[in-house]
Length: 152
Image (cartoon, rainbow, N blue to C red):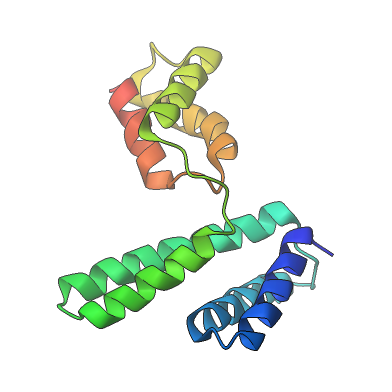
């Protein structure tokens, strides 16, 4: 059993006992997403901590996008709820990388792959090196934008 999944379950129990509605509903939703990921595909499997981090990252991204959409639509209370859920999920994610750290990783990946001369054609190579390094710690769109900036 995954240590992260155990921690999520224990925190859910604590939140329920403390009658923390936001935290308990968010953790229930996350655990459901993890279970859905485990049974997706041809056969059920146990997710590793890395797989669970991927699920958590996608859930956090979903909350950010929903909060933005609700805010743009003038539904501030729904935007605040989504943002609060995102904060609960963020507690289980590793600390996010800064823009400078992302730029340093991209620069190192370009040097490692020798992709500086190829321009934008080398984007796939560079992303292939950088993506595993930033997994769960940076948004893929931000990483791709930095790669484009440095290659272009």
